[in-house]
Length: 251
Image 1 (spheres, rainbow, N blue to C red):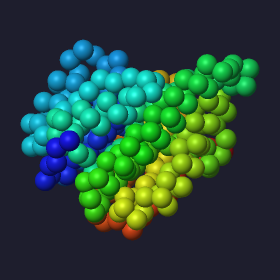
Image 2 (cartoon, rainbow, N blue to C red; image 1 turned 90 degrees about the horizontal axis):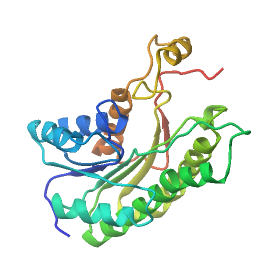
Image 3 (tube, rainbow, N blue to C red; image 1 turned 45 degrees about the vertical axis):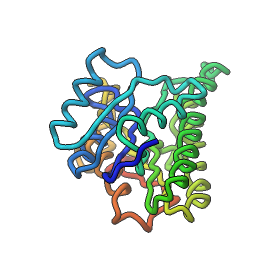
């Protein structure tokens, strides 16, 4: 593994122009942080195109297409980041799997598919990041998970997803206590419904009245919150779930 004098962020789930992960990469790059990003089943030229965009903004960047359902993906990823840019001190877990399912549709495969990516991969990547961080004797690190708002009210019709994200919320709080002595903060961000790459016009019409600020959340809104938690200004914040969703009402 190599070491870099620059801050390096590893951001998963930056797979298209409008994803939250992509917005996070852009925001951190604007602050002079080198970016390694991941995607899965993206357009064939996406990695090169987005990598060049970030490099042209003045930072180093590299990307990797990776399947987080593979049990050793976290090891492959951290090895590749270290080889190409150096070891990161910021880890943003934005990659997620989400398939709508109500109680009539929920089955073992749906649960397993959500668990493999949203829980297992996130947990393994986070703890391996911490192990390697400790080897380098770094003094300040960040782990930030993207979670969901199930703690603020029910999310019917998406049972497998909310179960997996609920697990990550609980994991974040306990991991933060374990890693505090290393100088690593662990937090989660709930961005609320975000107009990224899944909303239709019908969904937008239904959701808009539930946002008292008069607009639907954008990927850039989540990115600003994540960038704050990744900064030195947030060094005293750990074990928290930040609900950054513009006052969205589930009622």
